[in-house]
Length: 392
Image 1 (cartoon, rainbow, N blue to C red):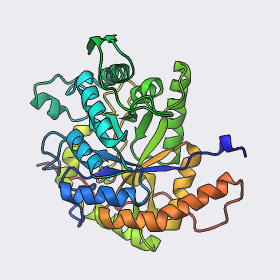
Image 2 (image 1 turned 90 degrees about the horizontal axis):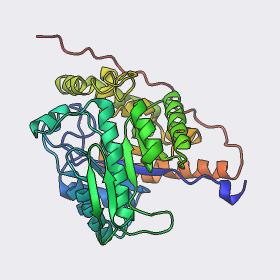
Image 3 (image 1 turned 120 degrees about the vertical axis):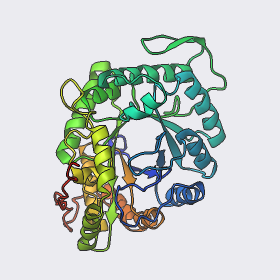
Image 4 (image 1 turned 135 degrees about the vertical axis):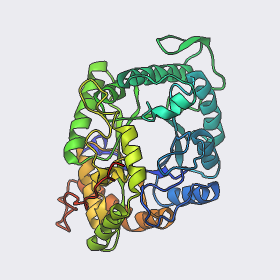
């Protein structure tokens, strides 16, 4: 195996809990907090325990168990200034930002952080946030068309002088941004992430994005999405974007302990909040032309972790999780976006107990040595079924 063919190490990101309620919609204890002091300490713990990125969530109004939230771009900048190596990704909504305004904010944040700012372009699922602010709510595929135009404008402003764009959603005329973001080897501008599971999202990622985030998926789901995104990139004559996968990680000393935690999370689900969230997002998949999309096939149990994080199956012992993570890497996953129940404790546990095993497996594969037999990764998750509330 040549040096050029050795795959890069997996990267790890975590969901910033800048929104109240934790990462599961359940009454189980979650030792986490949406405030800045907690998150500043968490960011420092994360960069000292092998995390490369943090993703600040974007929510604008209280709902579905997320009563309070800090704005994503300002919170991301605060975390960048509190850390030394961590890259922080700010989630934003086209339709509520103009690409020129975000480009200016991003350039400043990039300079202040030494080139560690990134952005996640979210096409939107929460209709009420747009209508409450008096902004138009577009049909699903139109939202992705707007996002693609937003990314094209953002990249042009960050990389060229006298940027021009005459689009259906944005107009940029002879716009020059100075200073531009910091550049370096392999970094012509801050990294641009996007999310989505739909056909429109996959096609857009191949055409314009640097990274594609998927909701939680099993091996078959990841295989399908990776193939679609790569095909879109090939058709556009681009290098494929890198692939990020959401997962809720429950690592415990025994598999039984980890499974018990999962069962308790689901058994203590906040049924009203889960159903409210489900009602809001179920239009996302069925509203697409081909019926594919985020949350279309999500069960009530899946929605307890609102990005389908249980479906990735990162539930078990450190050995089991490490093997499953590396198996996903073989399918094309470059980064895991992780959520936890008790962030401070579990980020440290991940760094000390799980990550070294992942790196060991990666090194063995890179050296073309057979991986020794060990504990099997967890099989398909069996979640306790909870019925939605009866109609009143």
